[in-house]
Length: 117
Image 1 (cartoon, rainbow, N blue to C red):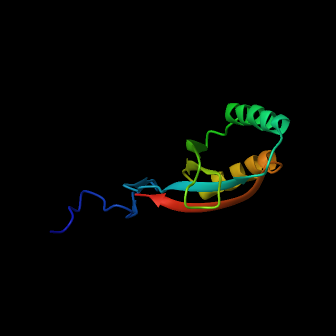
Image 2: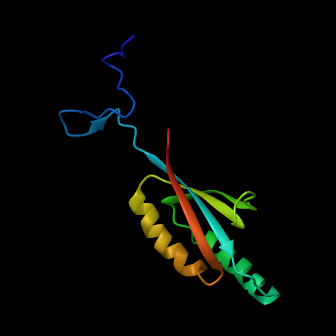
C-alpha cells in the first residue's frame, strides 16, 4: 500500500508555493544528562538546594525540563535530568547558562541526545 498523495509522509518536506513548509514534522530533541555530584558539606548542600530552586524559577522556556531523577543505578552517576527542546541551538544556549551555575558542585556529566518520533 502506498501513501496518499494528499497526506504528507512523516519527515517529508512539501514546500507550498508561498514558501511555507507544509506537513513537516519538526524534530523534538530529547536529552538525558547524567550527573555526578561532588561530596558536599551540609552548608554546601543547603546552598545547592537553594540555587536549584532559583535555577528552576529562571528556567528558559526553549528547553523543557521533563524530569529530575535521583539515582542512576547501573552507572557511576548520582542521577540524571531529562530535557526536551525543538532545536539543538536552544539546548546549546541553555547548556552554557546552566553549566555555569552548577559547575561548582557537579563534577561530571554525560549527555545522550535523541530525536523523538
